[in-house]
Image 1 (tube, helix red, strand yellow):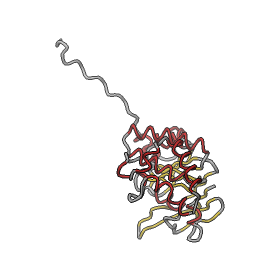
Image 2 (cartoon, rainbow, N blue to C red):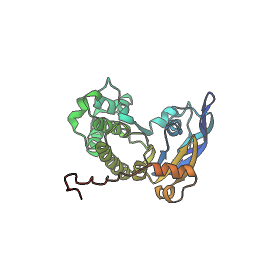
Image 3 (cartoon, rainbow, N blue to C red):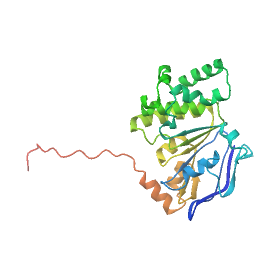
Image 4 (cartoon, one colour):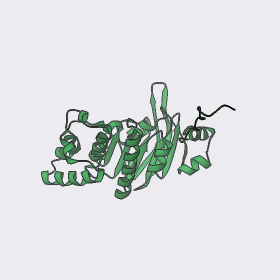
Length: 255
């Protein structure tokens, strides 16, 4: 469904991406993980033609992404970024239906699709009349997911979708997103620096470091069979929460 073939990108003297190759089968979920500045967002944006690679090519369902094809490819993708990425001058409903209306969908078709998406993302209908700044972070992100799904795209692209959310809202949305993508069997490419999030939502993980792809595999492979010392260090840095020891009873009598 999606092939990144030797994709490379430079800005001036800085190499953001060394030649990178990765493929996703139809219905497969892959996470791009790594520290900030490793090239994750640059790589995912080449899929949409938002970043033009200096070398290599991107194939979407056999179509090479370029100036003449990028717009058509974007309509076959759903794209979600941090905090929803909503247009502030449009209501939530206006954001969700914008492209469908530009494509001259009939009103009945739009309403039917919106109804089904409200149920899917578990959002109240009355929130669609609000503007983004009148919504909570979690609500904005649910609206962003609705917008991404509106045209029933074949591929879903998520670029750090939950970074701005508090831990409880983030966990709830992660669980809901997993249920959605599993039910819809969409091809998913997710950008995150969170190993636990990547392991929850995706079957394969692709770890980048300084613009290079250093290991691709299941989460357990990165943990148990790290390909490089950096992989080991990255995994070790993803510390699970451990309850701190209980402090001694200060009121206990001294020995």
